[in-house]
Length: 325
Ligand code: ACO
Image (cartoon, rainbow, N blue to C red; front, side):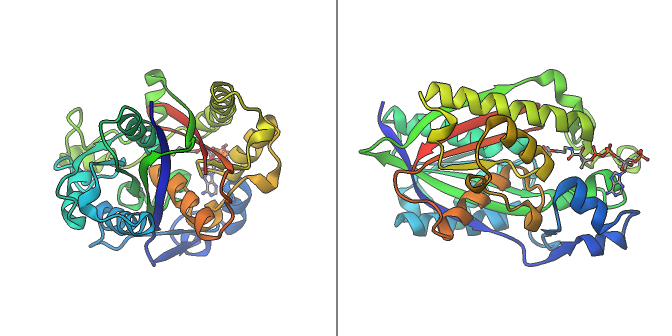
């Protein structure tokens, strides 16, 4: 098949900052607890009039401008999210309208925190096979809208934002290897029970708080450490690489302790690992593309660098990808 590269990146974040000190006034918690257990210091929160598509659209425009493409040159838009503007139309279709990508097909992917990696894997196939040229892949969330700010177990963790990339054909090697996985048996560990067809939004479901994120923190923690390690190894093996070949590691930004344990097992040096969760918390599908956007913006990646990105989350789902920049 044809080579696929990332030709553009962009990200967008809400202006409003919610600090650990702010959370101390909302639930029984402390800056010290949150910092020690998660590494998070603050997160960005969308305004009431800013749905997920708002940030997705901003990120998409920046990624297109970076790639030097006009919206009409896009063939497909894939958007990973667990916080779509509504059930349908898809948020990808809303972004398609907002940016004027008249010739692009558009759909959402639901793979929770792995949504962006799943989107990259799917989008790359269309270019690989020669079906499409330019594919926009977005990870966008406004998790604050489905977070219970009276539940200290979850409300300290999440934030809002969006990141996007443009995938295009390339004469050189771009995407080196991909690995995706799922285990639906662990679905209960991380879910938003109400709001779908199983438990539609009714007064009864709302009063029980089932429209909010539910999480079995410790189980998810153990799963995360194990799966980052396994997924990274699968990606390295499929790409005929070792951990020493990786120049940049961008894991899903859920918790600093998860990242530190995984990185220790993988024996990847700290300076090669990108972490921004202290500023943004866990933005689910948006975490990895925002981190990638920052890495590029700061000029940290050089041409030819090999970047390993690994996501994991609700489903359960996981996925990794190695790209040559
Ligand atoms: N402030 C103070 N105390 C708290 C808070 C808080 N914000 N949250 C929980 N506690 C308390 C608990 O109630 C518990 O008290 P108890 O012992 O009296 O019952 C105590 O702290 C310890 O709780 P644990 O759950 O054991 O704490 P742990 O060290 O496991 O940390 C955490 C909790 C941060 C949630 C951790 O388990 C974690 O990060 N898990 C993974 C989360 C994750 O990665 N999610 C990713 C996917 S997200 C997605 O897909 C949308």
